Image 1 (tube, rainbow, N blue to C red):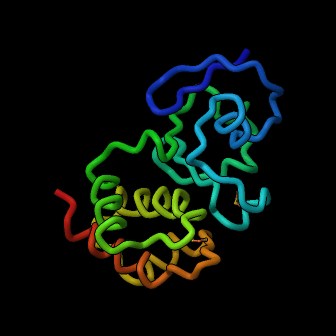
Image 2: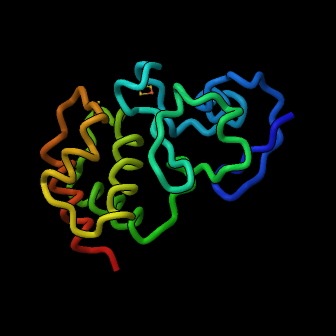
Image 3: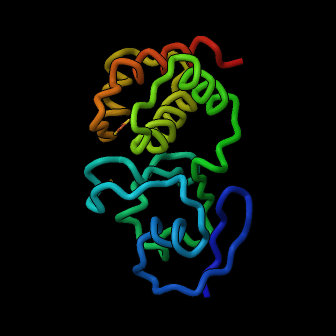
Length: 151
Ligand code: FES
Ligand code: FES
């Protein structure tokens, strides 16, 4: 048995140590907001926060994060995340939506550490999050709008 802290809840899970965190989140705990894209740390669809920092849950063995604070899209609750989600809605960012959970997790982590990101900062923070619908222009605009609205 392993103890996981996800979205301020504690879970006991009976899984192999090397099970990817993504599968525990989705299959064991039923939190379906975090998506599987590539399984190889190449797309960002599976992004969650580990102690506030974005990580790729598809390549993270669950044993590596036991006892740490994990946040998924379902558990986001900060002024930065609220500003991001509001901007995403206002600017109608998603197209198919598949990548957007990961995009929002990455954007929220960026703004949590940098309240006024430059274009270069945004490029650096978001470059690992791929959108096959190419919503990049709206994502950038929404991050800037969110930065202006964090209160
Ligand atoms: S599914 Fe994890 S980075 Fe693509
Ligand atoms: S909105 Fe479709 S992949 Fe990003």
